[in-house]
Image (cartoon, rainbow, N blue to C red; front, side, top):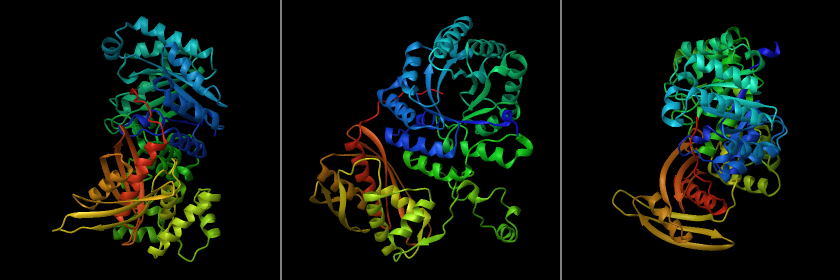
Length: 513
């Protein structure tokens, strides 16, 4: 397949994805996701919007210093201070890009920018020229392009390419466009911009009307050769085009799209899980490609067909996207070597003290569960090997509760080798438990969200609790796992406290599409 038939995957999970309400990630979590995206094989990682906060600047800089294969990109408005900040953040990357944007629709120009088309055109050209002095790879986005006048889009795209833009991105910023309409916009750009062959056409679609993936794929058919997307489709408002759906559509239907990506699709489920854990956004079971039900069949007719020939009801193989299923792999008699090797097969490398901690936790879980699945192992490792320091840890807890009695929980925590004990009553065992923890650590938290799901099937399945809590004015997401739901709840809350105590709070960010 010719080079022109390759579609570049521009992942903006760390920038636009993080703009989803409640999805704020720490610098270490962002770096971990960046490494996962690099393993996945995405071409460009948009690591953030460096000018908006010190935290964002440092996160982009950290990604730039550590990522070697993917292009690291920083976003900037069409003003010098933004471009300077982006350059300083990405300049240490082996391959770097500055992404400049400026609104071009009448509604944005009139009410937000209060500028004429002539002023906007000059600002865009000047910004691209300024960025071009700093880096060779410059991308320009006319924000709200799908609602802009087409003749103006043709003109501004032509002029920014003359100024040095190597990629021109055509955003459907508010998710307003429909697939046929959006595809025709890309086709019209190709036919009406005389120097369009000197730049790559990119697309960035939002999912407000549920057609972000359809719009992106329509654009690919018309010649767009970069797609901007996020893992699990997270992002501002209803989210962005889903990376995994874009990639697998192109891979599954080469007869229609006649192009390919360089994404290692077997890493998709692993990255999806990591982003879900870091943001606290649980992937719906019916989510295409990465949902738990994506490769499960309950209908007897479907089951019969699958047993005879998988292609009767499956258009892709589960292993093609790294879908694990629930195969039994280890038990309480399994040794350290088998444990380590299985984790390695799952793409997780642990050694030294981390291996000791994870193996100790595995043995504890294996004593309670008859069957230990791959998902259990990943949950154990994720729960035990956090990206933040363990200030407090759970030693034990006991609870009393019932329909006609006040719930009471006794909690013992450990900090710096010392044990602390408190008892508390509450409106249910979780409330009593959290009040007892608050009394011990002397930090009162506010529970904003609480969710629980089983990691695998069965009565003895690990329960995974995900919470969002406000502690010391910081809103954080944390997880806890156990075969005991109250223990999992306690661990999630303690992990949230540890996260706040061991990390700086990121500055509040401004949203941008």
